[in-house]
Length: 302
Image (spheres, rainbow, N blue to C red):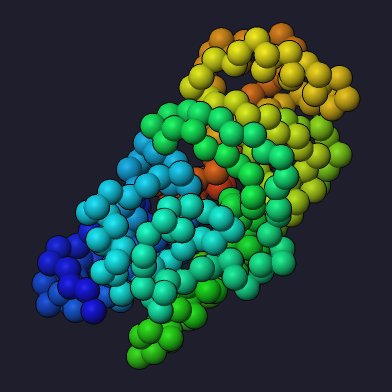
């Protein structure tokens, strides 16, 4: 079992816990995860029985991040490694990790994964060039799939540390209840006008669209980069047969981009995919904030 001498720093979901003693910390198993939603699920399920480490920097998309030597050593020494699956974290194919400790949380719904064809490669930010071809990976934007990923974590924890199985089950039950409620409220909002044409600035909302019946078309725009003339021309072509009045963004777009979109009759709204640690709140609060903004799109502000 990996040993740890100090408690790891995390986001709000860990802030509410009491701090364990030094002896408890030294005996606590370490779990490494590849994205923030898995960190949140693992913390909710594991409680004080595990320490969850998510080493990706806050300014890099974990889907395209490559861990440095220190982070990789942490993954290799962890008691369990929780991966997303669905082609997420492609660095996993380039390194050697202990297979007996590597858990892919999407294995149980492999046949429900969305396959992508013809996605182009593009470049942005410190992660450089990447492509969204292969398999759509933001599975946690469908709350029912998120619950299945959480169940995979509970099963892995219980198999590894059966003496805490009842605690893991209680943590999972509470999380599952929250995810069921989230699924219900997203469905209610989207049902107000399920045929409404929508745009997405980036191809990361496939599971959201599939689960909740969104009429969504994606482009390849970044919130912090100015669209090129070619991108504007292509967007006008999309709007000719997909008359969207709203575009979903992962983060707030540039003011000038927002202005030019508005001239085309398209308003901008942020729907944070929450792949990395949020600046405020946690997975559940970020998703509920997304729902509020989505409610405005569908004419429902409650």
